[in-house]
Length: 107
Ligand code: FES
Image 1 (cartoon, protein in one colour):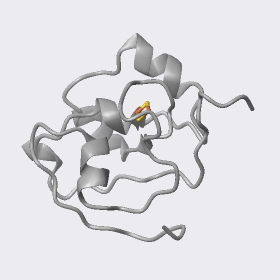
Image 2 (spheres, rainbow, N blue to C red):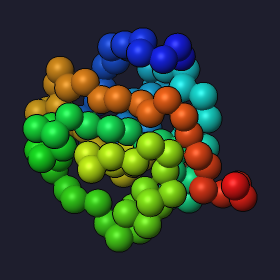
Image 3 (cartoon, rainbow, N blue to C red):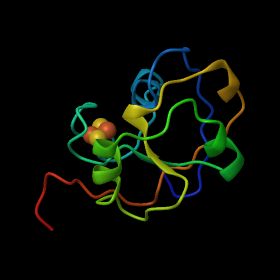
Image 4 (cartoon, helix red, strand yellow):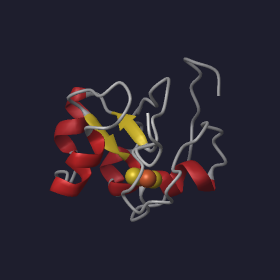
């Protein structure tokens, strides 16, 4: 997906954001490499501050450890496979960082 391109997707409440990317066939290079098992950090997403504050559940310690390894980490970063879609997310714009780093690969 070219840098800066916007893609509109549908999402089912109860799915996680990795599911949303897969189900909508959004082409993001290397995204979700560990298939949601909290082992890669390639599903890194960046939220707007106001949206981030409304996320239903805070990250677990395991997610925070993995986020530390993510490319281009922000204060409003989360791992997509750990964020469950809620009705309140309708209309949110969520940014996919320009690069990925797969925590499973030695750098
Ligand atoms: S898909 Fe690997 S940590 Fe989310």
